[in-house]
Length: 272
Ligand SMILES: C[S@@+](CC[C@H](N)C(=O)[O-])C[C@H]1O[C@@H](n2cnc3c(N)ncnc32)[C@H](O)[C@@H]1O
Image (cartoon, rainbow, N blue to C red; front, side):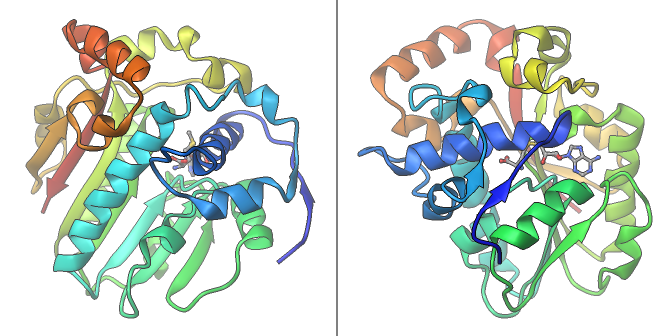
């Protein structure tokens, strides 16, 4: 581990600085949603002008309610599958492995582009059952080294929108083909969310482009043979959204009143 690191990222890798900073700010709030003490400690070790992320304590729940939701689904999966493989794709600097504490028999892989993977290795300690894979998730090669005889949890938080539809579908199909059983858990933007990406300051400032919009879960069921839907939700319908401040709840209620904004972001969960 390194004490202090300088960070200079652009494009999709830069966006994880915003989500990570949201978790660090949240950890200091009296009504913290995620309680991510790792994010808090690590942000202090990174030389970066965090104001560039446009994240504040007030807008941090847009990130932390999502992460808390996927922590919950992850725990549910691991309770039923204590010998699983976890593929945490597009993990950024997220501390989920340390937050969730997956248990001694889980093999956990945090996977992101080389510049992000290198940062993780400088900032987090090594741990049993835990590996960092330095690769684009769309590269078919990295999966070959992952044991294929266990159930898998594929978790992609804040990832699918950065992939093209062809790359995203190919990735999901490869995972389903590699493992005997498992779950696919990810969030997605609708095609309306992709069309209006100019309104997303984090993405715009990073220079990244969003590609893959998903409107309904039947698109995934049709595109990835063998999967069945377990859950499909708007963020505003989840337990974790119940923890936000009244001002944020008012915004959520307004967005829930219009189908286009209610499902602009969605949480997807499938089994195979
Ligand atoms: C918005 S951040 C989300 C980070 C983290 N999952 C979270 O929720 O805090 C998007 C992450 O996806 C990663 N990413 C995007 N496309 C990728 C790809 N093709 N291969 C690997 N990582 C990718 C980026 O590098 C970045 O870390």
